[in-house]
Image 1 (tube, helix red, strand yellow):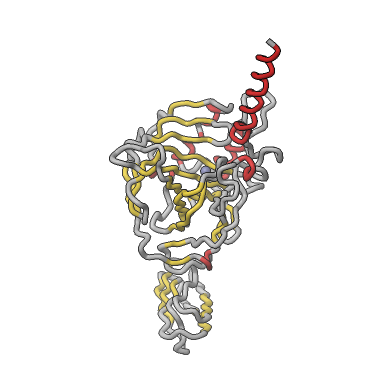
Image 2: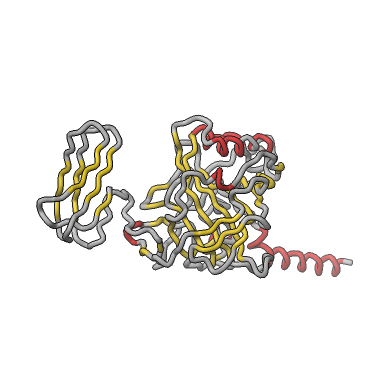
Length: 354
Ligand SMILES: [Zn+2]
């Protein structure tokens, strides 16, 4: 009897040891299980060199015109957002992957969109996007997870494509309406494990409004939560979705990380940026300066100072003719609709758009 007990105990201990890396739960809120130790928890990709998220340094981005526009199918259909869930680490919305597809954009084939979820910080005090651009983090980030299809079905070992959208706070209240509708479900899923059906007529396009989906960054990375598996094709869209601060705040004031009455609120649900390790970020965007004001195609220095006295509709087109250093000052005097064409007296501009 004793022998049986000892044998069982040994077997159980062995099982615990082997299953330890996967059985340790991860979290965002405690040092013992936060992203500080995920590289230990994520045994498979412990030494991974292609981890996500990253900081996108726009001056290092390579322009790649083979990154074509995407085709999004089903993104304009309602009844495709089926269920919203509090997973304990995020808020996740299940998509009808039979109707939701993405192709193009340099992706290898057709991808079915299965879910989207959010990452956020702590109200207006802490921005919570995982990815950042030139060190700037946005208020939140939305990730759409899509899996490669094979003959119309999803194989278990699908390649993953992740689409990241930044969310920037606006000064409105309750805007946009689509986000207000979606956020209205949060009170129904306050505790971890809670889920409810999405019954409102909402489309993915409604939630992504204001984003030019031809402007994006592409790199190879990983899941941003354990096990942090690599081989994920990341697309980060340049334009943010504008959402009013009151709706953003609902994430940090409404949902909890477990079912206990003393559960902490779900806050700061993002992983810190990971080393780029020589990876190249590519983009179809010609010119990558974050200001977006000056995008010279030549490597020389160009400075343009535009001083418009009018506050009405104004279009300024700068057409320099050469490629060396130039400073130009434009001072239109009209107070009505103005079209100004700047022709510097020095013949030394590269191509600039304002
Ligand atoms: Zn994510």
